[in-house]
Image (cartoon, rainbow over all chains, first blue to last red):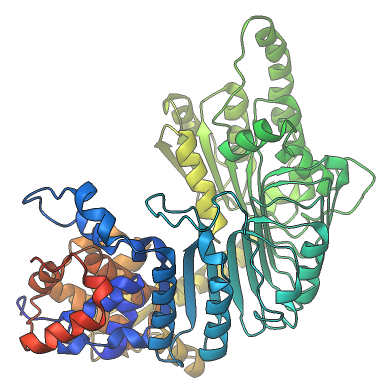
Length: 482
Length: 158
């Protein structure tokens, strides 16, 4: 049994499904395996085109090939390399070779220079015109391959793609990475697009506004690491999921009645210019302490919108706005410094305002300000205040009736942190699970196990995991791809 | 009063929590409803028929061993490491069963895993690994290599 060729004997549909997971060059190469594989790639449902791999496909083998003689790639490589135009031609061939009714999604990674003669725009035109089933499109411009020696186009010039008016009309999902957009015209008639993800895009306020206006049924919008605009103004009742990451703006105004999931990470904006109306919000993520945030803040010289500022502003805790967007929120994922007086204070009052909160995930800061000498005594003074803050806190509806699960990362056993957990264990009647990821040692957390529990079936999980900035970052990113 | 209400709803939860499945080798297995719900074929049946969960749902094409593996995979949130312990036979069985049960996430996961096995490997390596017999005539093979020349460049030596 073990020696049978099970993979070739799978149905064609399943083999095509496997081929659809591969890069186009790998999928095409499988034709050579046996008759049962020959030509199957033409029916793939997803086409992954990466020009970097087209330039020199032989590098794929570096990993699997046992070093009989280590090939001198310096010597072999130059004659093998294709010019960008040869690769561009190859892309056309691949597009025309696939069956026109099978492909439902396509991802293209191309070079800056593929934009020089309008090839990218042409591929997109052909793809949408030819592949009637195409619903998902992802385009990414990648840095140029340094070995290429086309001298006829300048390295410095920034190519602005000029996609055809209304070319995205039939798509339901579009992802654009690393472009400058100077017009919203390609988004004309975009009345099927539900998901739009823009990463590293340079666009101005007019273009951004135009895009949002054109996408009339947009449900899921991500704007990441993008620049060029000053205001973020989104009024959209169709929107359900919104992700904002690494942005720098003067004001944020969101009016999205049906928004269910909001993700804000490393955004620079004065807190008094943040106005959000989303009465149906269910899940909220807010991060301001990540590695990203630190990089962005250092780069721009401006300070990040802190999580506690965002929470207190949008819950109506401070400021003139009295509406609370967290009223129906059931899942809250945030980073906070519980040893910081204001942040601890905000959390304690904030919990009172979230009467439907069931799941809380708190990431304690990986980067902590060093407390030394005089500032330490000042801190000690506040510390006393923070402790009493939790000790005497009355039980609110959230803690008493709703809260089911708590997850705390980066726990260092500081007494302010311990006090919050103690408060939750002894008061939260409905809590089923509390997970504490300790950074240094489990010692302080182990003392928590002997506390009288308010909930009859609570399980306390302690884990030890020194959180380094990269892990923390990866964790946020994971949450990000909801 | 409040307490009794709580207990009642809890008892209810417990009742709907598991569904009994009957595998091809006649083993009755109680499976958590959250896992069963990933099996479109069972799910649609349960939903349409408002089924009595005590009657085992027959799965004539899935063995108890395969079902065990599937349950473990789903429970472990599709753990790559766990799947690497599968034999080719088990992999095939799970794939065929996932297709039959119409488990989209699992199918996707396995297809990706197999694609990863194919990726960045030489043709000879793949043929050996999966026992694929090259049934092309030398002429046919040369023809395929020629039409798709670019993907075979510098790969031909083995």
